[in-house]
Length: 242
Image (cartoon, rainbow, N blue to C red; front, top):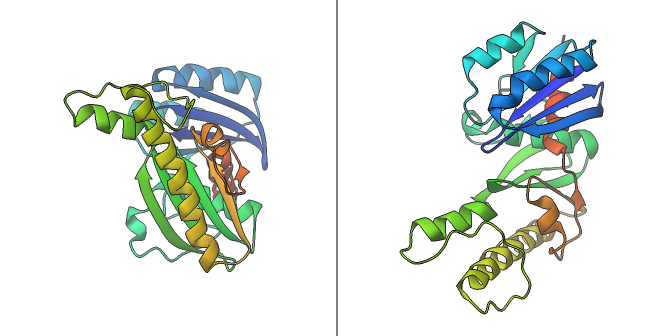
């Protein structure tokens, strides 16, 4: 069994896989990680490998504690990957995007695939039907857009609840919500349309923390995969075990 730890910008996901089957997943803050891992090893005593995917700083003391339980591998671009990386600056490609593409390639092989990750940022990553990763785009996520409006203006509030009731806002907060939600969904639909014009039989995958919220509002046909990144990290671990 494998223990997968995904360290994001705002939270940590911890998952247990039996081969390619996800059997346990939890979300937490970094200060709860080691206690949770301790309980995981009590529950699953046959975990033999750990892989960490981190886009934020995970203290070395945490890494060393994990190594006391099982061999730890850090996800990086230097590992063996299931796809061919045509990115012009591969050294700058984030491990989160590497994991997403690996997962998409595993689930939809020989397919033109656009992966949209709606998290702190909205990332767009494209892999073609020959297994070549081509690149994509990075855009501010929903919360980042709200925070930017609050930070860079004198009078706009910080919006932390953004359910959209009507596209016409009747007060300042509703106008901000309309602008961010409609702007994001229209952006995503437009980007999907660009790829559909260029690539036939495009499969679109939506994942990330805001994927459920956005999926109900998109016009395009998509596949929602909430644990896509975790599955990608696990597939890379399996590829690099030996």
